Length: 486
Image 1 (cartoon, rainbow, N blue to C red):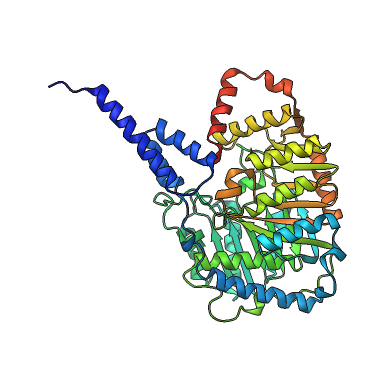
Image 2 (image 1 turned 180 degrees about the vertical axis):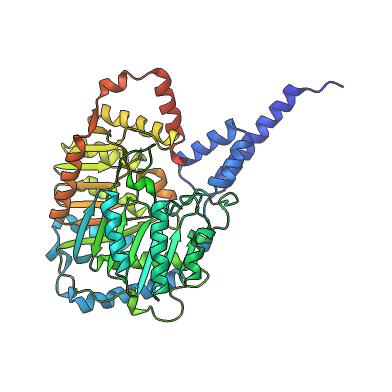
């Protein structure tokens, strides 16, 4: 009896398509992601379903943050007590920030439970060597606690230097806790942190992931970068812990990033985020039924000038708080909006905000790397760069190494520095944290940094994109189709 291979193939195609539709529509997701996954599942049978098993399924929120509401309530009470002690109730938000920024402050207060932290001192770092020199100094000076959370904590020269210092501080009796992402820290195993654990410190992969290979929630990564020393000094931004962030990797060369050192009540937001993530990760919680330890939120006497809000987002919320913040800043811009991001894969809402701003006469400029670190992501970035350039937005390719900064600044008045890229993944899939800043001095400094970077960049014109080969344009267009799941 002859086997009708044609019929068998048709049956496989029909069954595969039916399973693809059932699989994708089982969970609530946006239309763009639905079509992207249907494309993968239908046209790449079997392999597509394996990919979906690891990176396509949504993260069940009831497993995300144990004691989340209880912990958040205690943190809110502690932060309110801090505000009373600082006497901040004597001034309303309108007394310390511009009227234009009030709407952003109110939005973050409602969607992210983010309070307006006032009178902070802020230092901007754009070079890894100077940043980690200061980080090491602050860790060496720690007396009570060191809390560290990074997407990447590599087992290399810098990683071992930081680890050795943490071991030393733990041996001195300082509370040392580390959260790292098992995928972002590929090659760094639990064994790497054994000296720290033996010294009395603690280190866990985010959500206590046992194995990267067997992690069926591979798509959801802890992309945050947080350091809190003694509850008084905080760091956040784009740098990770590893040699490549010091420009030691030949592949990337100079590493151009942006990070912040914060002293003041803004640190409370970083500390609160770390505590929530630690409670979701560690078998032992920092906060349980007892009241939060005051040592984690010491009263600050800092008299700086910078007002800010620490905003976090992730798949534990459908609000996409940081994306909303980006859109808010873009729509508030009247003169200019400068953006730096290693990836440029915006969704329709961000694209529309950029178009509206540019059409309204706002000088919109976006800077991305001139080299890839992820092929599909880079081609998708090129697609959107071409589209935006054709619509009158100035897009620059940074030529002096790898551009990894995630910043936005508008009108010498408001800015954002953090871990979130301008892409779908940071908006919906990753756990991110940003600082939204309402300060003329910091905003002007970030603007000047952008302008200086323009001297090391090439403006991409529509004519330059037209000269690209048909094959390159095809790769860009194809990568763009997968952008909702990259």
